[in-house]
Image (cartoon, rainbow, N blue to C red; front, side):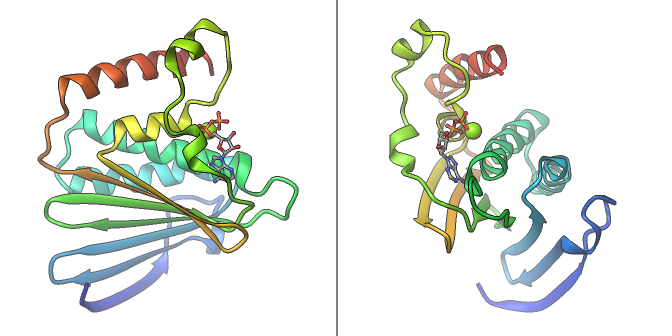
Length: 190
Ligand SMILES: Nc1ncnc2c1ncn2[C@@H]1O[C@H](COP(=O)(O)OP(=O)(O)O)[C@@H](O)[C@H]1O
Ligand SMILES: [Mg+2]
């Protein structure tokens, strides 16, 4: 991406973030890039949600899709808050968004302990539903809500999940059914 201008300014919408959060915009020929870095605290999840919501609307998604994108990102950021900095000093949640004409890409990164994302990609839903388990569906939910999901794990350096949603891609009936099941279970078991 060729950038023509870079702005770094405080992201003003929350008192909680004070000067630590920045919205960075790189205006390229066909792509825009935005970045919000916050301390890894659940108090900042709402701000991240608003940040993503505004950009997703602007990218042309309808309300239903905006909610799905926000939910996927929220699961990724909640994982950073709950799991990334377990037993080590808390670091940042780094949210980067790249918007092209046809796609919306969110990358959530942390500098935490890392994990094996393959282990959680496709839980056995029959087994899951037969037990009254709590949690454990976040990564599966991200895969179900977004079109492409890629994890890159470098413990204590950069662990990231890149999530892409295409602006004009319809969701298959199968995907919608999967989303319905997992959303219902997620709500029940919170
Ligand atoms: N950013 C992260 N850093 C470290 N571990 C993570 C991270 N994201 C997920 N995990 C690990 O993957 C597991 C599964 O995550 P998830 O599917 O969201 O379920 P839950 O958060 O309810 O446990 C977590 O329990 C945790 O062990
Ligand atoms: Mg989770």
